[in-house]
Length: 313
Image (cartoon, rainbow, N blue to C red; front, side, top):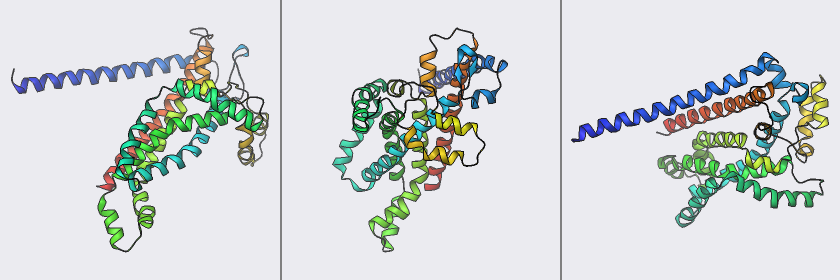
């Protein structure tokens, strides 16, 4: 068999594999949307997205509490992970000696490969107890602990992509800046980081996607209470223009309460839900919501990364 025939076989085999993967993805999407569609024959999309009560026994399927808790936990994780991750990436790419990079990079990749259930158990046994005792709370299973665990889980993503982005900045940028009399710190702050910023931002977006879609770890540490804090529910029921500001001011208090994310609700309620029923369909609707969010984040990060690579050439 000559090389040309071998190349044709490999070409057709790869085509079959890629086509099969694409068809499977399409079938999954169709199944997901089909199962979720039955819910909206009973309630409107707005009632589902903005409703504050989730009680399948009474026919109430408001997903806003789960979205609110997912948003708060993810935002808290980003507040922790972005400064640490970007700082670590800058250190590894521009400051650390080669031996430190050779040791640190495999460790970061190892962190990315640890199963999420291990992170959840670590949070449940160590961090939950620490927060409960230190802050003198009734329970340590809070949104704060969820944010800490998610921050640890998304750190490898942010560090790896940010480091790659910083290292991809052409060396001529740095040499030109130093030749003009700028210091190392000025070059780093005003030349290298701004040039690598789109790639760093893409890494953050991918981290957000990982945080929003995480299930096992958050189930173990959030406390799994779908009830919105009374303050938030009260403010949502009012029409005052300052509602959002008041909620933001109360976020430190809210972070010390239990919650339940979208992924937690799907996992915990899928078993008891009657197959084909409205409750079952509502859980699939939350899955569709997660799919749309992660799809948008993934596409956005890929676009930003591709544009970043083009601009650096």
